[in-house]
Amino acid sequence: MSATYDLSKDLKEAKAMTDGLAEYLRGDVLYGSTEGGFFSRMPSLTVGALLMRLRRLDALRTNMMDSDRRTLDAIIEQWQAVREEWRVHYEDKLQQEASSRINAMKSFFQECRDSMQSCRNNYRPELQKRTIVQEILLEMRDLNIENADLMKLVNAADTKFHSYMRPDSFQWSDDLKDVYPEDDFWWLYQKPPQLA
View 1 (cartoon, rainbow, N blue to C red):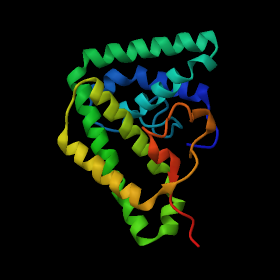
View 2: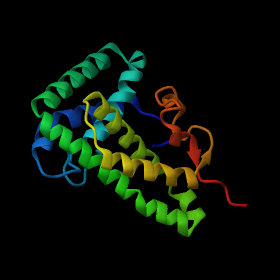
View 3: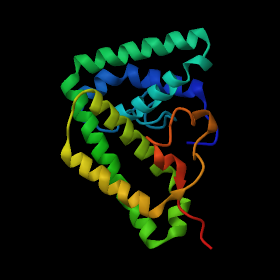
View 4: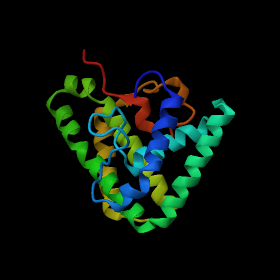
């Protein structure tokens, strides 16, 4: 996530992800692709990546033109329809993705153990991973999905995050600060300490 937020880019990505969601859910690939093929500049299609964009867009809908609000409403309606039609696949992908993203953070924690400078240089992608995991956890709560093993992984990762990070200002664009309150998204208000 850069220092600036592009609402129209999020809307375009959410639309592409939603358009490909049914096919993605039926497939075996965890990190799917959206339009444009292998060399596309579009992010990977996952349920969590879509949920992250939907949160931001819905929270910022008052900043949109009427046409963009209608597009967002259509995206949300399509997402909900696909989620219901492919519910078992959807729930399975949610849990697979959360575990995958948390496990992928292990290499970052190893970097932090080895070098705090490396930790400081490379922490930003981990903020997005953890944010997407949080979106998945919130969706799982809304769908009444319990997964004790996943929660153990998340709690262990959060403990490590706390050991390497220190409170700081909001790390993403200020346009998103109200979307991500510190109580629920504390890692977005932290970064590794500056070395003396």
